[in-house]
Length: 379
Image (cartoon, rainbow, N blue to C red; front, side, top):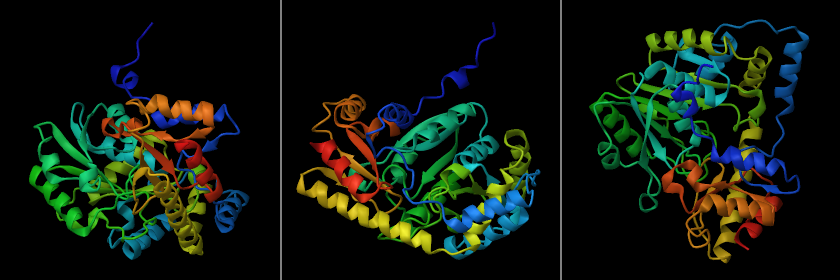
């Protein structure tokens, strides 16, 4: 019988998904392992999807998305991100994950190298491998606030390097780029003629600092901005994201590629996303402040118990140091915590080799459950 191609078989399993599968078998466990907002999807968003269904908006839409949504996204990018992106350069995608895959599909040749953060979301490596590119980790070090360092990037450049992926606010770290660093990273990409994928899916969830979009410093039309409705509006299951292309030519390629992947995003879900952008925005601030309060409660708990961590400035994750507890095998330790103590967290090595000895805790969980889960984790 025929064999599966090497690039498909070699896509790594998500360590977070493995924990999720195990946690589903323990229904009484506390789940601090997944970025699933505890808030309900806003009623006006649900009503828009329902109205679209009632109006029989169930046919194909343009590959790039319905015009009303693309126009609303363009307005949001200008207002919130300081980016001038014409609607024809916006591709509506099936969540942020598909935006990431679409960008990589458009820019990477077989065997090209793409620089990805370590620690970083495991799907970065998975997506690069699926398009037959080679992911190359660049370290985010604690002594530098888990932010990219140009010197570390320079050390990993080879003739095969074609792209760099930047994630801010970071999953799993919660670090946020400064304006100065964002501009330096763009100039680094210019110097080495690299495409840039800027994962900004948590762009509206920062706490102590403003969000900075890399596209603001893109003078050479090389930055692809990836965004999502999932976290900002508690719409994870509706699967709507978007990709902002750097110029008209790349935008045309993206919408052409959409035909081969999803044809178009679920049409009623697009109307829901339109309502999310154009309707009341108070839910976004409510969630942001709740995540900030949960962060503060969590770090106060960890301080009392002498547990190290990185204080996140954005997203809704807490990166916790358990090196003195896990015995050098954080994956086994987290599974033991789940089986014996009923708390699920993301093992740090699922986010790259540098994550060994750390765990990711989601602040998207209600405060009471969050604190009880932390108690079980460090007991």
